[in-house]
Every structure is written in C-alpha cells, then in structure tokens.
Amino acid sequence: MAPKGKVISCRAAVAYGPGQPLVVEQVQVDPPQKMEVRIKILFTSICHTDLSAWKGESEAQRAYPRILGHEASGVVESVGEGVIDMKEGDQVVAIFNGECGECIYCKSSKKTNLCGKFRVNPFKSVMESDGKCRFRNKDGIPIYHFLSTSTFTEYTVVDSACLVKIDPHASLDKMTLLSCGVSTGLGAAWNTADVQTGETVAVFGLGAVGLAVVEGARTRGASKIIGVDINPEKRIKGEAIGITDFINPKEIDVPVHEKIREMSEGGVDYSFECAGNMQVLREAFLSTHDGWGMAIVLGIHPTPKLLSLHPMELFDGRRIVASVFGDFKGKSQLPFLAEQCMAGVVKLDEFITHRLPFEKINEAFQLLLDGKSLRCLLHLS
Ligand code: APR
Ligand code: ZN
Ligand code: ZN
Image (cartoon, rainbow, N blue to C red; front, side, top):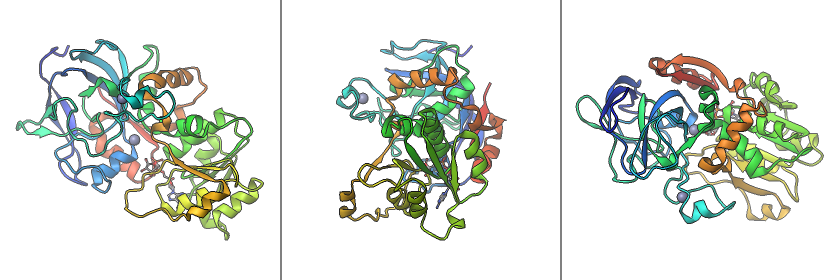
C-alpha cells in the first residue's frame, strides 16, 4: 500500500532531452493538493503527440526533465482537498482536455468541449493550482508535467478535471485507448460530423486516429467509407475496421479529390484529415460535396504554414472545422463511450497491436516511430 498524504517513490520514464532515450528511474511523487488526485497507473500507451514532443519538433514547450505520456488508465490512490466525485480505488482514465464543469465553456451545453482552465495546452508543464511540479528525480530536481497528465510513471498527480471515472467492470487495459486517439477519431465522426446512416465519408491517413474515425463512421452506418493512405499496407487494417474503398494517392494519376468525387456522386458528405499534412487537408476539403460537405481537421500541423484556401471557395458551401478530443466533454461524456465499448458497439481490440512491460517503453516508442504499431499498451504493476 502506498502511504497516503506522503511522498511516493516509484518508477517513471523520464525524458532528459529531445530524442534521447527515456530513462526509467526512481522518482518522488508528491501527494495531491487541493482538487488534485494521485493515481496508480496500470496501463499507458504512446500517442503521436508524445512522439512529436519527445523529438522536440512539436509546438509543445521544450521543458526537461519531463514525464511525457497522456494515455493511461489506473486506480485512484488518494484525493486532495475538495475532490468529491472520486475516491480511493475508483477506476479512472486520464484526459488531456479537461472539464472543470464550472467555467462558461464547460457550462455551454453543446457549444464547445474546451474548458477555460484545463483545455489541451502543450505549453503547460506545471500544475494549475500552484505552478509547481509534483515530481522530483533522485537528485531532487523537479520534473515537468506534460499535457496535464504525465502518464509514463507508476504514479502521477493530475487535476481532478483531467480524470474520468470509469465503470468498475470495464477492462482497464482497453479503456486506456479512450484517453486520446480513439476518442478523438470516434468523436469526430459521432459528434463533430454527426454521421448519419447512409452518409459517405473519406478518411485521409489511416493511423490510430483515422482508423478510429472509420470505426465511428461504421458504427453510425455510413454507406461508403473511403480510406486514403500512401502506405498500401493500411488497406488491410482499414478493411478490418470498416473501410469500403481504399485509395493510394501514389497509384492514381488524378488528384485524390477528383477520384473521390467520381466515386461518391460529386463528393463525400464528410472528409477527415488525419495525416497532419497541409496538402492532404486541401485535398480533403475538395473531396467533400459542394453545398453541404464538411472537412474535419484532426491532424496536428506544427509548421507555421497557412492553409491554401481562397475565401471564395467557401461560397461553394463546403465547410471546414477542427475537432479537439472528438468534441467529447471528457468527464461527462466519456463514461457513455466506455459503455459503448463494453457493450461491443465500439470495438477496441483492433487498435491494440502490441503489449510490452513498462520498462520496455523505448521499444514501444520505436514501434510507433517505425509505423509498426497503432497502440502498444505498456503494462505497469
Ligand atoms: N496522404 C495520405 N496519407 C498519408 C499522407 C499523405 N500525404 N502522409 C501520411 N499519411 C498517412 C500515414 O501513412 C499514416 O498511415 O497518415 C497516417 C498517419 O498515421 P499516424 O502517423 O499513425 O498518426 P495518428 O496517430 O493516427 O495521428 C494522426 O493526428 O495526432 C495527430 O500528429 C498526429 O497529425 C497526426 C494525426
Ligand atoms: Zn471548465
Ligand atoms: Zn494523443
């Protein structure tokens, strides 16, 4: 049993510099302060955003030493003053896009899932309440936080706004995927686009995010789901999850949007950009049907390039919007998504391609870097 209210010593994978292998070492984790929760992490996984931050190429603040990671599930070890919605032993999932429930953003019923205080923030590296770190290494040096969660550790401290209580009967390993990638893609189809039975969809980039969009569109009964990827191997996984057609842009001699318009009677109802590429985003936009088509941006575009889009093009009735965390209000809406997964409506198994013990985290990074894994689950305990 961990000592409540006291500092915990445990293993964590610490990033000491961009691109340097993570160092698995003992760290000290402080008790949770007001409105914070300390959790024992049982499973964590690596997302593309961790990779970009680790390489130092994303917009995330370059703060070292740092504990990266933002996809995790575990159990509550102890709660700080004022936390009333969770208690020791509860099963929880971490979310990087928090929900305080009290600000004007959180109180807007459907307008936004961005919280005034705890919305996704790559520049934040300390706790909200006092601007300090809850981790220290063996030399007593503070270790910075990442995306309000920092999950590559046996214990972490997060604001209660960034934790979701999950059904105690849910399989926690699978629930880890709801922390980011799967919720982001699935929610983009369910909430942002609100795909209806019989509608048509094109998904650009069949990584975990794009495939989760495919899963979302399939569960909604989309009649055509066109997967687009420059990697021909993505067709197999795409078909296993639900694409009805596949386009490899390198294998056709017309622009992708022309091909898609031809395949879908003038354009798809919704297109999703999940590759993080500006040119792909323009193709996605032009692939939608004029009059009502909607292009949804999910990819992260770190370079300061602007989208090449003439304002007059919007007069054709195509819309372009972005989707953060699948437009889910995490704390209040993720339990429903968890139920859908438990009921088998949403299938998570296809997304877990590898499992490794936590200490092999650098191997798991390599798998994602090499495009070999969708999600590698790291087991702690
Ligand atoms: N056209 C089509 N597909 C492309 C292109 C392109 N020009 N360039 C890359 N892709 C494909 C890749 O082959 C890969 O299958 O896009 C897919 C991206 O998948 P991942 O790299 O696994 O990324 P994922 O984790 O799904 O995230 C997608 O969201 O979180 C952000 O930074 C992340 O921008 C990325 C996006
Ligand atoms: Zn809020
Ligand atoms: Zn992520």
